[in-house]
Length: 278
Length: 311
Image (cartoon, rainbow over all chains, first blue to last red; front, side):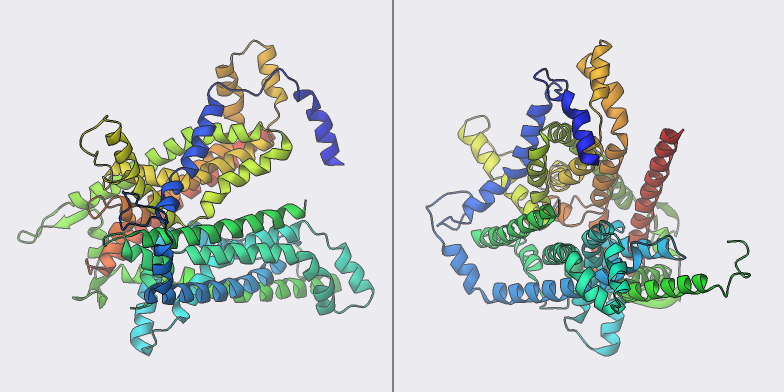
């Protein structure tokens, strides 16, 4: 109904006479899109360079992809990145789903604002601040327990993934009213049955979207990983950051191009998932 | 709230309390993780900022305010007098200056873009918006790296300019403040466009039409109608660009080199070669405080504009 009314109201705007034009704005917008995409083009092109230089083009080749593929450090870093991103995004999504169920579709209750503030904290505190705070904490735990494993990275990543998983799930939940759950309860479904059979299937696109966002965020993280990781615990981004200090070969471009493709594919899926609900 | 005790045994009230308890329980696991790996460490850092640095990093358990004093001051080794620490002040100043410049540039590019998207037909808007969002989800490191390849001495820009004969020597762009600003603008630009677009989406263009009917010029319509009404989005976008710029670490590290540090790099340095954890902790908390002040001002400002509209 509401959309119908607004579209009727807006109809007079669709005239050939342009009220909406502003001088130069279209040109600046074109420039903006150019600026957003143009710098990525040489990056991708030089990943296919046959030569070792990032300046001179010596012909098309996949040699840098092969060299990255065979590089043991890259292999290890890739596996570590994926393991980390999968575990962090899974845990974060479960926790975020529970928190979203606890904080939506209700009146204000005591402590609700505090919960919001805690969940959103990773979005507000600069990453470098969280990173050094974690470094301090984990350094003393590492000294005390002599454990240097992946758990530190997983818990750190889980924490900053929670708000990213929480936001789409919460948005989805807020669009669902409680009538269906109430109906289920009226038909003697236990709360768990109602959740399993009614809430969860409806919530699923939100959960999936949240998990994908969390996955991409974890996969891309540099700052926290760089400061929290123990020696020899490079993820793909921290490995690349380390490489940038040396003489750069197109191998870094090849890795970048692959990561770039992964991000673009994930975001595209996310876009269509979100679109379906409208 | 008054008379709460009188209805304590009311079954509805009791059910309500059970509901609130269940809701708290649902949020608890997430809150525990966030406390362990986000809020709790900040408290520990606060304690560390008041301790003495250890010789090889870490801390000595002795109270000291040196960490905080050293944020902007330095003690003369021989005389023990305090003076302004030029290095730190210049880094602080660079951080604020570059973040402001980044915000301005992002606004200059982002506002017209958001306007452009908001004036497209409804069906194609989400596609344009999607095009703005994609780069944002590409790894920040990769985007910074792309800028680096572009502006290196042997980078694409210099090669093109030299082959066209416009310059003979490559222009040194990498490892300058300019490079950091360009990089941050590039990286954070989508954060400016999205909130401005959000505030324009609800914008009623009949107001613009009314402006033209009253003989306003295009510029006047922009200045008197569009800008004031999209102000909440502009403020939100500026905050979203300014805050991460201020705390940027990766972009200045790659594009600024070791010389042109920003606050984030100075903090990182204290936990690496600097081996002064209390100073690093104090610097990190300083950054956090600046960010919180910016956020508070934003929340206040938004509250005010909403109130004004209510009256």
